[in-house]
Length: 313
Image (cartoon, rainbow, N blue to C red):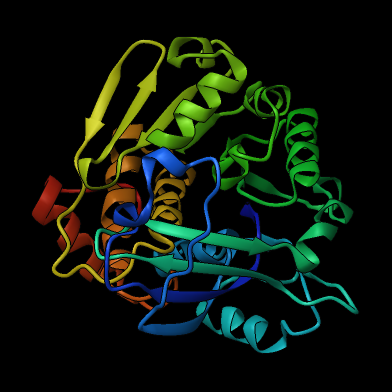
């Protein structure tokens, strides 16, 4: 049985600003902002939440199935993912559209300002879990909002355990929509900023979310993450990187490691530890798919930080 990864497929345009964004915002003039940041560099990388997550799963020995929409410019990207061990047979290429694009500037403190062009992602609702056989677990990561809600509904109807990962779409989706994805999820995952948006929009705090989902994971960057279950709360530290290069795709790598553990039936604490190790590899490289490692290398780094890991190979 397979792991189905849904979400955006995109090209990332990553830029570096040699200063601090926060120094250029004027508190007394926030009602009208007009800023332009001169960046030092720009790189075009393969990206998108779904391929980033799937890439980490492939590095960890899984063969995830990517279910998403891409544009007419996806050919080389598809071949690269296939070679990396990702099953792209469920990806639909949309004629007459370009693949979604992510334009992101990062400052010296790893703060980011980004824009996202939807492109072929707007067609994601044309895909359906009803056409997919043998799904063990799925993740509904940032994508066309309507498609995300459709996928969550289909997973509930078909009895497929799914991770609800609204991510950047927390800003776009209403409280009703966010709650709709939460209800029935095996896990809800978000960072601390996104959790506050969810709380404000839905009125649901941690315990209220656990009334609708089995578990909640809140990531906090260098401060690690918290796994909240109905009967316990566990904090897992981040793994220290050997160098800080780029935060783009770090959260996706975390989700890949987390899903690896979930697919193997591991305890949630072990799942989060796997995610922490995977996230650090991404943080040490530019973009979400520039890093690589073998399972022995990954396992050695895990054991260096958390002790022995068994039962997830």
